[in-house]
Length: 392
Image (cartoon, rainbow, N blue to C red):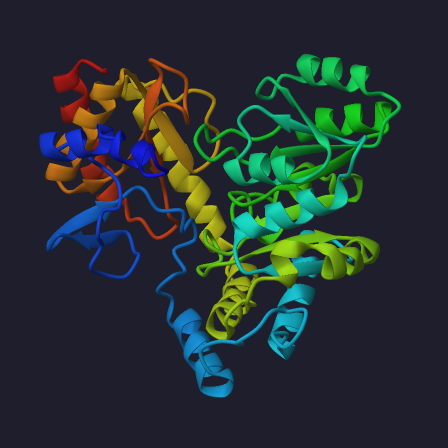
């Protein structure tokens, strides 16, 4: 027996590869746009999280090039010691202003941002209360903390209150996704805030899929509901609407100061590269100066939700540019992926444990830069494949 035995016994992916149904780690040979090149074939991208279509914007690319010329390609150290640049400070102020918080702190990845805050601020005898469909980075951040994690059924406010009643007199943090990345629905933040006030809890919102999508100028879920002053912590990523890589935590100055000195994923990781930092600043500039991008994104969202529903697809509780198509069995999802891929459409099949058994889905997501022609071409292909597989 050795540590590699478990690796050798994992054969499912190899079997799917041999059968032609392995949909992961696909190699793209082009920039991230509404169309990409996969294995030399032009493919319509309906699986990207670049909601505003900024990854190839000329101003974004220019900002990255200028940053490399001035600062080089990396910082060669952590933020704590020798890796803090003036543009890191500029970015953090822009992020704080964007989401309406006093201060912000940038991390090298969004995953690290969640690990960094949750593992640091919740200690022994305290509680983390999470939605059962929260992102994996939230779950892992909770596991790394010394607090106890309690979970409530997805967007079920009665179940959340049940959990809160059991820990009424103890420090606790409710942590939810603003927009849930697979379901495409929005956290019931008004009721969450109400219950948090009733039971003396604090609230953190993961806005990874909300920045650039919800709120004024894409400022996120709390702004969308007019509840910014009722939320304690906002987390966000740079790898979706903000066209880069990295993440941030926003809140009050006291929290940011504490994280700077105790958050291990920040202190012991190399800092965000200059090009990535400048890219995010440029993306925020565009997001704030071109509100028509977000308007177009929502025009596309409403159109595709209606068309998919009218066609007979079950889109569940989706109300954002993430539109899942519930197709049932695992092999149905893989077959649908294969047929659409062969027909030039890039989508993402989602299978257990990310979703319940027998409720697999095809995750589609849309960009503000998709054209009407591209959308209608895609709809025809979804209609043909859906009928052939008996999904619609």
